[in-house]
Image (cartoon, rainbow, N blue to C red; front, side, top):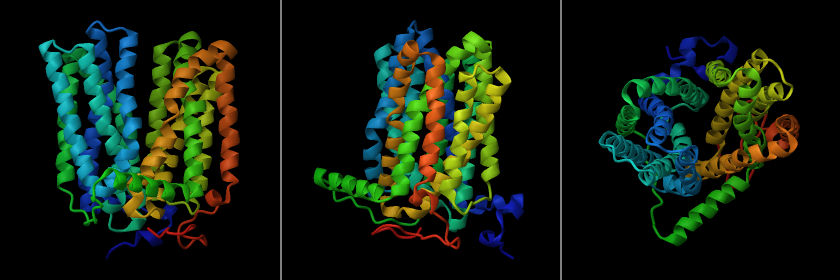
Length: 434
């Protein structure tokens, strides 16, 4: 007899019930392909860094190459959302995987031939970033189509988040070993193959047909973009949480990523200590993903926002001059909170945003969340030089605690509930249930 997972309380659901989403054919194909390509893409930055440095490049050269990957992602996110809604997420993601796989294969070939000048690396990673910027909005939009029962949507997002967490930990480790043994070209070739696996899995999907909005023309593209902005702006719970995430990246996470290694080198024992902190952060994310399997809190945005309080802990431990075990413990909690928040926010978005605008709305959310991150990375060092590392980190802690309190006070966030919990499904004109 089929099990109605919607009626089983989360705390009583067995592991088999929590993994019921793997019984969905399309999701399983996508999960395998996406996880494989994720492993490759998490390995690639290590290989690129050593390709630049082994080729005689300086730290400044490496910075140019890394920036060349990030900038196209930010620039094409909005266009990626429009394209995904017009032509379908699967087509966009399939094309992105093919392009990125070809880029990495060419990069590997140039390294093997000894003909990889800096300008060529910059061009190749920029194309890589372009594909990534097109892929991300489509990723958020395709998940609801992969499951036939919407009560499995949270489990689908939990497993995808778990895959991201595991590959974030495993990818750089494997890349370091392969790079040391065979050189960076071997890692990039592996990455190219994993994109091929991802593309094959996408080609195997049998998704419901969508009416493509492919009238063409610049005016139509702009109209689509305006419609996406209207849908995004009409949902206070969405743009408020997006602003919260964007300012977190500016004021908390970016300073932590820049000043954390500096503090670790000066006070905690160097690179090994920092590697432990970030590794345990990844472990926390894995545990958080496992925790979320089979669970769907009645007030998802409340739980997601409370989970972000943990992001203040590692910065607070560094600012207080705490010993390494306390910093590691803070990173563990922060990683778990990241997984919980990511799962619940993605599920909420996919549940309440209409599918025909989901790519565009997701692109506005992603842009708002990440656009300030590069500014924070660039400003953290100079600001710390003026007011001190501890003050910059402490400012982030205070901001995170205060901003969570503000977000939780917003009725649109606090009252967002699943059906059957007494809350409203829609909140604005044009919004319909998912």
